[in-house]
Image (cartoon, rainbow over all chains, first blue to last red):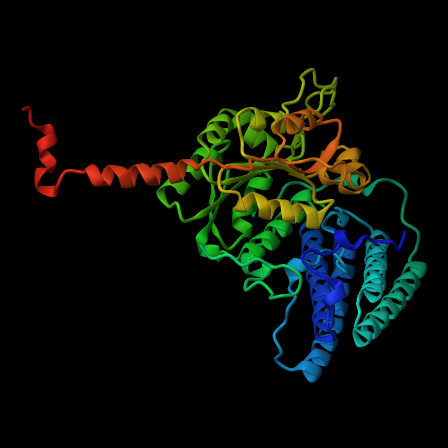
Length: 182
Length: 299
């Protein structure tokens, strides 16, 4: 996957060049929050559609993203206290969160890990681009730190993938589940 | 009307996309394009800044018509194909409501097809979002009105013999003032289009190529759309040019153009505004209460 992610496909109403350090930490918190919620949504969808292994992995990813979010939120609180935020969730799109279209009925754990790997690569690409776009040195240092973290996360996901047994042949989507009532 | 416009980093919108999420979990197939549309709607609405109690979602029947239940706004999941007449009634009875109609291509252009023309020519101020997947997904994959000619499905194993309806040309031909198309493959672009459509003061139509992951074709999926979608802005299209909009819309089914095809630069008064003006005018001519029964007397 190319790490060249056009910024206009990942954000809206957001001028990265104007970000202060406080804005950047707030943005990073939102990135983790969006990923946490998306993984939790995927886990719910796949639980409903009888895909427990991938659902379990996405639930675990959601917990990891929440841990990262909490750490960043604590840093933000310690440095900037109750200073109002100038960014919100409406400005970002699938930076570390997997895209909505990535989930599939009966996807394997390996496919779920591939989704997570692509998402970590997407986040790395965004933070790398953001690092180059910002003017403030402290903000640039934060984005550089986040970029490195995403590289470390990719390594962890790759290690998990390496430990998995190979997928069985055949298209799992051929065994789609029956409709459910809500 | 309360609105908050967010640009750059001036001020974050007062409302978050989460304020529009009802918390009810969608039962769409994992990977369905409608998840992206719903997410884009939450974001567009948070930017517009109208609180959920000032918004009503009206829908018909189909996968995408479940949207009202997934929002905190007022909602009416009505009967098949009848979302537009109900939405017009809602708007006329409470013109201050922001009314959004959501549904699929079958609901809109087959079962409810006759209503579209009248909603367009009447120009009631509402936003009609069609999640176009070229198939009846909820009933397991039959041909829909926008299904391409030759498409083979479980109930048409030898392929469709019919040409598809072109929803973009359809609404343009009846005089819609705002006509756009997008896809969840471009989330920021789709969100901006939804926001612009909702803000348009009249009937606004957005066709969203929202892929069906279970019964749709491979080339309709988000990953494929990313490779072949063509933003109209990149072609230098001027949305006030109706003739060019008609020409571009004619490529529906062969090219995936995204963006605003047509936006009337001088929107006429919407039907609900005209009715309000007529009501105000007639109120001036109304008989005094004491003479109200005189209308029934022969003089």
